[in-house]
Image (cartoon, rainbow, N blue to C red; front, side, top):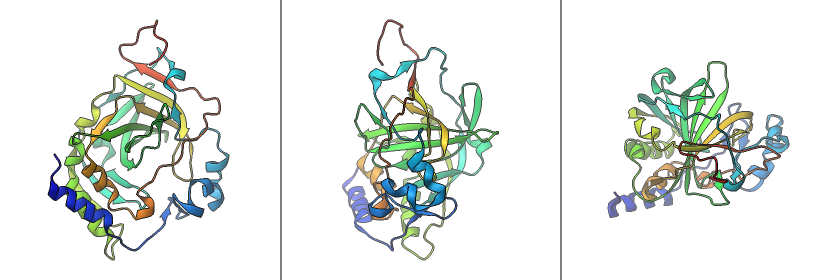
Length: 278
Protein backbone atom coordinates (compact mmCIF):
# COMPACT_ATOMS: atom_id res chain seq x y z
CA UNK A 1 0.00 0.00 0.00
CA UNK A 2 1.42 3.39 -0.96
CA UNK A 3 1.70 6.27 1.49
CA UNK A 4 2.54 9.95 1.16
CA UNK A 5 5.67 9.31 3.22
CA UNK A 6 6.69 6.52 0.83
CA UNK A 7 6.08 8.77 -2.16
CA UNK A 8 8.25 11.47 -0.64
CA UNK A 9 11.07 9.04 0.11
CA UNK A 10 11.25 7.63 -3.40
CA UNK A 11 10.84 10.99 -5.09
CA UNK A 12 13.81 12.10 -3.02
CA UNK A 13 15.77 9.04 -4.09
CA UNK A 14 15.03 9.63 -7.75
CA UNK A 15 15.92 13.31 -7.58
CA UNK A 16 19.24 12.73 -5.82
CA UNK A 17 22.38 12.29 -7.89
CA UNK A 18 25.67 10.53 -7.20
CA UNK A 19 28.85 10.28 -9.23
CA UNK A 20 28.14 8.88 -12.69
CA UNK A 21 29.68 5.65 -13.91
CA UNK A 22 29.46 3.39 -16.94
CA UNK A 23 28.08 -0.14 -17.00
CA UNK A 24 30.50 -2.91 -17.86
CA UNK A 25 30.06 -6.46 -19.08
CA UNK A 26 31.75 -9.36 -17.28
CA UNK A 27 35.08 -8.52 -18.97
CA UNK A 28 34.98 -4.86 -17.95
CA UNK A 29 33.97 -3.48 -21.37
CA UNK A 30 31.75 -0.41 -21.08
CA UNK A 31 28.27 0.14 -22.52
CA UNK A 32 25.22 2.31 -21.86
CA UNK A 33 21.69 3.10 -22.97
CA UNK A 34 22.00 6.63 -24.35
CA UNK A 35 24.12 8.45 -26.92
CA UNK A 36 27.31 6.96 -28.31
CA UNK A 37 27.30 4.18 -25.69
CA UNK A 38 23.69 3.18 -26.40
CA UNK A 39 22.24 -0.01 -27.93
CA UNK A 40 22.64 1.21 -31.53
CA UNK A 41 26.40 1.36 -30.93
CA UNK A 42 26.98 -1.74 -28.78
CA UNK A 43 28.33 -3.77 -31.68
CA UNK A 44 31.21 -1.34 -32.23
CA UNK A 45 32.15 -0.68 -28.59
CA UNK A 46 34.19 -3.84 -28.14
CA UNK A 47 35.25 -6.80 -30.34
CA UNK A 48 33.34 -9.09 -27.97
CA UNK A 49 30.12 -7.16 -28.64
CA UNK A 50 29.85 -7.81 -32.39
CA UNK A 51 27.02 -10.29 -31.81
CA UNK A 52 24.87 -7.36 -30.63
CA UNK A 53 24.99 -5.94 -34.17
CA UNK A 54 25.40 -9.06 -36.32
CA UNK A 55 23.45 -11.70 -34.42
CA UNK A 56 20.31 -13.06 -36.07
CA UNK A 57 18.64 -14.43 -32.94
CA UNK A 58 18.66 -11.39 -30.70
CA UNK A 59 16.42 -10.32 -27.83
CA UNK A 60 14.12 -8.73 -26.84
CA UNK A 61 11.33 -9.04 -29.40
CA UNK A 62 7.76 -7.92 -29.89
CA UNK A 63 5.36 -10.79 -29.30
CA UNK A 64 2.59 -10.61 -31.90
CA UNK A 65 -0.03 -12.84 -30.33
CA UNK A 66 -1.87 -13.52 -33.61
CA UNK A 67 1.35 -14.91 -35.09
CA UNK A 68 2.36 -17.04 -32.10
CA UNK A 69 2.00 -20.78 -32.74
CA UNK A 70 0.33 -23.12 -30.27
CA UNK A 71 2.65 -26.06 -29.56
CA UNK A 72 0.86 -29.07 -28.03
CA UNK A 73 4.25 -30.55 -27.12
CA UNK A 74 5.11 -27.75 -24.69
CA UNK A 75 4.77 -28.56 -21.01
CA UNK A 76 3.76 -26.47 -17.97
CA UNK A 77 6.54 -24.45 -16.39
CA UNK A 78 7.30 -26.62 -13.39
CA UNK A 79 8.95 -24.26 -10.88
CA UNK A 80 9.98 -25.37 -7.42
CA UNK A 81 11.25 -22.07 -6.01
CA UNK A 82 11.58 -22.03 -2.25
CA UNK A 83 13.07 -19.73 0.41
CA UNK A 84 16.67 -18.82 -0.31
CA UNK A 85 19.49 -16.60 0.92
CA UNK A 86 20.16 -13.77 -1.54
CA UNK A 87 22.22 -10.61 -2.05
CA UNK A 88 21.25 -7.36 -3.79
CA UNK A 89 23.85 -6.13 -6.27
CA UNK A 90 24.06 -2.88 -8.24
CA UNK A 91 25.43 -3.92 -11.65
CA UNK A 92 25.26 -0.26 -12.77
CA UNK A 93 22.97 -1.17 -15.70
CA UNK A 94 20.46 -3.06 -13.52
CA UNK A 95 19.64 -4.11 -9.97
CA UNK A 96 20.06 -7.85 -9.43
CA UNK A 97 19.17 -10.28 -6.69
CA UNK A 98 21.86 -12.98 -6.64
CA UNK A 99 21.08 -16.38 -5.16
CA UNK A 100 23.78 -17.40 -2.70
CA UNK A 101 23.08 -21.10 -3.26
CA UNK A 102 21.38 -21.98 -6.56
CA UNK A 103 20.74 -25.52 -5.34
CA UNK A 104 18.66 -24.09 -2.52
CA UNK A 105 16.83 -21.39 -4.51
CA UNK A 106 14.99 -23.79 -6.77
CA UNK A 107 14.70 -24.46 -10.48
CA UNK A 108 12.47 -24.57 -13.55
CA UNK A 109 12.01 -27.52 -15.89
CA UNK A 110 12.12 -26.71 -19.62
CA UNK A 111 11.70 -29.50 -22.18
CA UNK A 112 12.69 -32.07 -19.59
CA UNK A 113 15.88 -30.25 -18.53
CA UNK A 114 16.38 -28.71 -15.10
CA UNK A 115 17.65 -25.14 -14.90
CA UNK A 116 18.67 -23.71 -11.51
CA UNK A 117 17.81 -20.15 -10.56
CA UNK A 118 21.00 -18.06 -10.42
CA UNK A 119 19.79 -14.48 -10.23
CA UNK A 120 17.02 -12.09 -11.15
CA UNK A 121 17.11 -8.49 -12.30
CA UNK A 122 14.71 -5.78 -13.47
CA UNK A 123 14.42 -3.59 -16.57
CA UNK A 124 12.38 -0.40 -16.79
CA UNK A 125 10.47 -0.02 -19.00
CA UNK A 126 9.96 -3.57 -20.25
CA UNK A 127 12.23 -4.95 -22.94
CA UNK A 128 9.73 -7.36 -24.50
CA UNK A 129 6.52 -5.89 -25.88
CA UNK A 130 3.19 -7.58 -26.59
CA UNK A 131 1.44 -6.47 -29.77
CA UNK A 132 3.58 -3.35 -29.60
CA UNK A 133 2.63 -2.53 -26.00
CA UNK A 134 5.46 -1.81 -23.60
CA UNK A 135 5.02 -2.25 -19.85
CA UNK A 136 6.54 -0.24 -16.97
CA UNK A 137 8.78 -3.04 -15.62
CA UNK A 138 10.08 -6.46 -16.66
CA UNK A 139 11.65 -9.04 -14.37
CA UNK A 140 14.21 -11.52 -15.74
CA UNK A 141 14.81 -14.69 -13.76
CA UNK A 142 18.04 -16.22 -15.11
CA UNK A 143 18.52 -19.99 -14.84
CA UNK A 144 21.42 -22.23 -15.82
CA UNK A 145 21.58 -25.99 -16.42
CA UNK A 146 24.45 -28.19 -15.29
CA UNK A 147 25.76 -28.30 -18.87
CA UNK A 148 25.85 -24.49 -19.15
CA UNK A 149 22.65 -23.77 -21.08
CA UNK A 150 20.58 -20.73 -20.14
CA UNK A 151 16.86 -20.14 -19.87
CA UNK A 152 15.20 -16.92 -18.72
CA UNK A 153 11.72 -16.56 -17.26
CA UNK A 154 10.35 -13.06 -17.91
CA UNK A 155 7.46 -11.43 -16.05
CA UNK A 156 5.85 -8.18 -17.21
CA UNK A 157 4.42 -5.65 -14.73
CA UNK A 158 1.90 -2.84 -14.90
CA UNK A 159 1.25 -0.28 -12.15
CA UNK A 160 -1.36 -1.29 -9.61
CA UNK A 161 -1.39 -3.31 -6.40
CA UNK A 162 1.81 -3.95 -4.42
CA UNK A 163 3.95 -6.86 -5.53
CA UNK A 164 4.32 -9.13 -2.47
CA UNK A 165 7.76 -10.34 -3.51
CA UNK A 166 9.23 -6.82 -3.64
CA UNK A 167 7.84 -5.95 -0.21
CA UNK A 168 10.36 -8.37 1.25
CA UNK A 169 13.37 -6.44 -0.03
CA UNK A 170 12.13 -2.85 -0.05
CA UNK A 171 14.31 -1.78 2.89
CA UNK A 172 17.29 -3.53 1.30
CA UNK A 173 16.77 -1.53 -1.91
CA UNK A 174 16.95 1.64 0.18
CA UNK A 175 20.20 0.39 1.71
CA UNK A 176 21.57 -0.37 -1.77
CA UNK A 177 20.77 3.19 -2.81
CA UNK A 178 22.70 4.48 0.20
CA UNK A 179 25.70 2.35 -0.80
CA UNK A 180 25.60 3.96 -4.23
CA UNK A 181 26.27 7.40 -2.81
CA UNK A 182 29.40 6.57 -0.87
CA UNK A 183 32.90 5.42 -1.64
CA UNK A 184 31.78 1.79 -1.66
CA UNK A 185 29.50 2.11 -4.68
CA UNK A 186 28.64 -1.30 -6.00
CA UNK A 187 29.05 -3.01 -2.65
CA UNK A 188 26.43 -5.76 -2.35
CA UNK A 189 23.73 -5.64 0.30
CA UNK A 190 22.71 -8.91 1.98
CA UNK A 191 18.99 -9.44 1.48
CA UNK A 192 18.75 -12.39 3.86
CA UNK A 193 16.30 -15.18 3.18
CA UNK A 194 13.65 -14.25 0.61
CA UNK A 195 10.50 -16.21 -0.10
CA UNK A 196 10.32 -17.04 -3.82
CA UNK A 197 7.00 -18.88 -3.66
CA UNK A 198 4.94 -15.93 -4.98
CA UNK A 199 6.95 -16.06 -8.21
CA UNK A 200 5.46 -19.46 -9.00
CA UNK A 201 1.98 -18.06 -9.67
CA UNK A 202 0.19 -17.43 -12.98
CA UNK A 203 1.88 -19.73 -15.48
CA UNK A 204 -1.16 -21.22 -17.20
CA UNK A 205 0.01 -19.52 -20.40
CA UNK A 206 3.45 -18.45 -21.59
CA UNK A 207 5.41 -17.71 -24.79
CA UNK A 208 8.72 -19.29 -25.76
CA UNK A 209 11.37 -18.48 -28.33
CA UNK A 210 15.15 -18.75 -28.73
CA UNK A 211 17.02 -15.48 -28.40
CA UNK A 212 19.94 -13.84 -26.62
CA UNK A 213 20.99 -11.90 -23.56
CA UNK A 214 19.67 -8.34 -23.79
CA UNK A 215 22.97 -6.79 -22.65
CA UNK A 216 26.44 -7.13 -24.17
CA UNK A 217 27.92 -9.42 -25.31
CA UNK A 218 24.37 -10.40 -26.46
CA UNK A 219 25.17 -14.14 -26.35
CA UNK A 220 22.62 -16.20 -28.28
CA UNK A 221 20.95 -19.61 -27.75
CA UNK A 222 19.06 -18.38 -24.69
CA UNK A 223 15.63 -19.99 -24.24
CA UNK A 224 13.10 -17.30 -23.30
CA UNK A 225 9.81 -17.96 -21.49
CA UNK A 226 7.55 -14.91 -21.13
CA UNK A 227 4.51 -15.26 -18.89
CA UNK A 228 1.30 -14.07 -20.56
CA UNK A 229 -0.17 -12.96 -17.23
CA UNK A 230 0.89 -9.38 -16.54
CA UNK A 231 1.47 -8.76 -12.83
CA UNK A 232 1.29 -5.56 -10.82
CA UNK A 233 3.53 -3.42 -8.65
CA UNK A 234 3.15 0.07 -7.23
CA UNK A 235 4.81 3.17 -8.61
CA UNK A 236 6.82 3.38 -5.39
CA UNK A 237 8.11 -0.16 -5.85
CA UNK A 238 9.20 0.60 -9.39
CA UNK A 239 10.91 3.78 -8.18
CA UNK A 240 12.78 1.80 -5.52
CA UNK A 241 14.15 -0.51 -8.21
CA UNK A 242 15.41 2.47 -10.22
CA UNK A 243 16.65 4.70 -7.43
CA UNK A 244 20.10 3.06 -6.90
CA UNK A 245 20.91 3.41 -10.62
CA UNK A 246 22.49 6.47 -12.21
CA UNK A 247 20.03 8.60 -14.18
CA UNK A 248 21.25 7.33 -17.57
CA UNK A 249 20.55 3.74 -16.53
CA UNK A 250 17.10 4.20 -15.03
CA UNK A 251 15.67 3.50 -18.49
CA UNK A 252 17.59 0.32 -19.15
CA UNK A 253 15.66 -1.43 -21.90
CA UNK A 254 17.16 -2.57 -25.17
CA UNK A 255 14.89 -1.91 -28.20
CA UNK A 256 13.08 -4.88 -29.71
CA UNK A 257 15.02 -6.86 -32.32
CA UNK A 258 13.92 -8.45 -35.63
CA UNK A 259 12.52 -11.97 -35.49
CA UNK A 260 14.46 -13.02 -38.60
CA UNK A 261 12.17 -15.96 -39.27
CA UNK A 262 12.01 -17.25 -35.71
CA UNK A 263 8.78 -18.76 -34.41
CA UNK A 264 7.23 -17.73 -31.12
CA UNK A 265 5.44 -20.72 -29.61
CA UNK A 266 3.01 -20.68 -26.74
CA UNK A 267 1.63 -22.99 -24.09
CA UNK A 268 -1.93 -22.67 -22.77
CA UNK A 269 -3.30 -25.05 -20.18
CA UNK A 270 -6.89 -24.63 -21.38
CA UNK A 271 -6.23 -24.29 -25.11
CA UNK A 272 -8.84 -25.63 -27.54
CA UNK A 273 -7.63 -26.67 -30.97
CA UNK A 274 -10.38 -24.77 -32.77
CA UNK A 275 -9.01 -21.47 -31.50
CA UNK A 276 -6.81 -19.50 -33.84
CA UNK A 277 -4.93 -17.12 -31.56
CA UNK A 278 -4.06 -16.77 -27.87
